[in-house]
Length: 97
Length: 373
Image 1: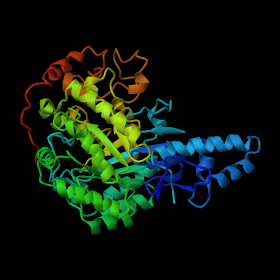
Image 2: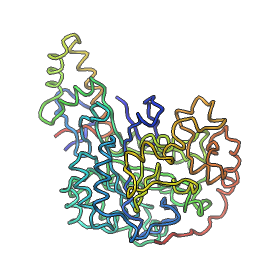
Image 3: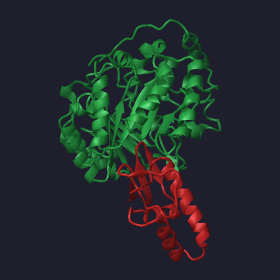
């Protein structure tokens, strides 16, 4: 398991054991549970995080999202995904194999 | 994406208890503890082992917590590993979807038990370290266990659990803050909480022994800012300037009865771990009432919930839904009036009650008044 100080498109991101993604019935939202923190995900973040599984690269995640949301440019999606995942990686909540 | 933690306010606009959904519960499994920390956050009056609630009642409380939307269960104490059913409770909590955190001194646990907790689904461990200097660490804890804590931290990482170091920093150990940050990195911790002494309950007896000087805090802030840059992505550091030296009060517990609840070893349900210091309030017990009812309807949870209870200067303040009036326990402990603005607020008419202790912050350090179970 590696900590990621700078994410690249080829990285295969995953959540570390201490960060857990799940749908919360009470709030009707996807959330990430982490030590002393809860991240409530907006719709876009929830779409991204459901693809973060330690099996596919950020490049593939972007492809997948681009297929689903054709109205946004691939370039824009790629930029947004990197920014979002980097903010979690900076706090240690995204790692790579 | 929004992020919440105890020191941040929660942005949901609902004001009525009906629509509030709590995030976390602190399960104080026992008040028994081998340490004797002079800033202990447990109430001045401790519960005896004979008053502790059963495994089954704890399990029911955890199940009920999930139903009202609680996401995280923190197993604390006292020393929670003093309870033999800890593994069983962690396993139950984990199975029903709660995020589980063990808050421990680390002195009563071995590798075998850590493995069992890992297998039970424990998500995270927080270990307290009183100082980096072993002698001073043991003086503060009132217990010879510094090396054992370091060993436990290593075992926690060895079995694969994530680690937070919690260090209460104050006048008598702030000079070692840099070492504490380095120790946390060496121990491969993900997080370091640089915590402040909260001066109510037992800690108030030791206020002068702990209050740091302004200079110490200014130095600490610089050290933390530099370390945050240096260890970005390696070690997260939680640090807030203690409220005695701030102009605005903290958003204590994210607001009374808004995000958090605490269950005592005897089964009482509190809006915060120090709430029993408000001795005029009656706190309901799980033996008599359900968790959901207590959260929504009890007098104690509604007493300071929202903003309707506030007198001036809080009532018309534009920060009233940011800090929710600050800390009620502190207001009561320092002014005798639980409705008063938190005296740490610059607009509080009681702000002067902090001047006297602060004026002594540079004086000779008094001896600790230890607490013993």
